[in-house]
Length: 249
Image (cartoon, rainbow, N blue to C red; front, side):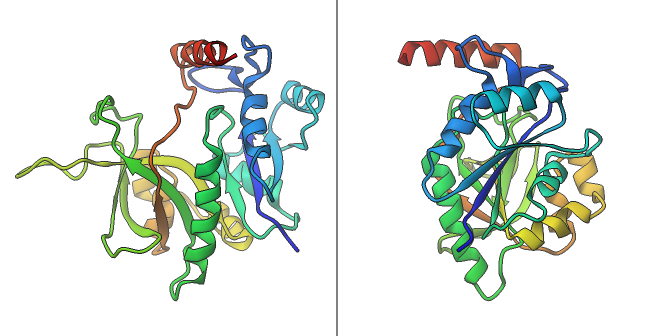
């Protein structure tokens, strides 16, 4: 029986923190932390998809299944699709390599939520996560993505729009936004179809590839969880992660 496959895209040339996947001030490469969290989820397979031999070598060193992918992929999803193609899987989870503190319970909820969303009369093309907006975060920060959903109730709402702007705009009353969490689940065939789509106008405008699915008329299911985990985008993010990690050690 096939199992969920978690693919961890790990590109070497990050724009803001080049080579971050191999930063190892904790004693382990950053990518290993993410891999270990994913491996802790029961009943899944995990593979790292990269574009650089140094990451391949590091991943093999800590025992990971790793594949080299095309360095010219336009997105992490395209890299995930290449790594997943031809592999037996009940679904494919895209978990970014710079998420060393991703919560295993959030991954489990995504898997369970996507299984349910695929059984609904209008099956989900993609499932993803969101959480209530953390009060300490600035909602005007364009690096933190917001999502507006339906209010139909049930295990998963439907995404209406994703944006880097504040939405909904609190014109007449205060409204706590929903924070999008960049974990995605696909049926294997939906992943390949999505990776083959040309980026839509809104996706290019916002630099949010999930908008291509919405503009194509596909359903994106949004599963609510309690909180997000901090990703690593900058030197400051990594320093804060190292501090938290050493405090727990």
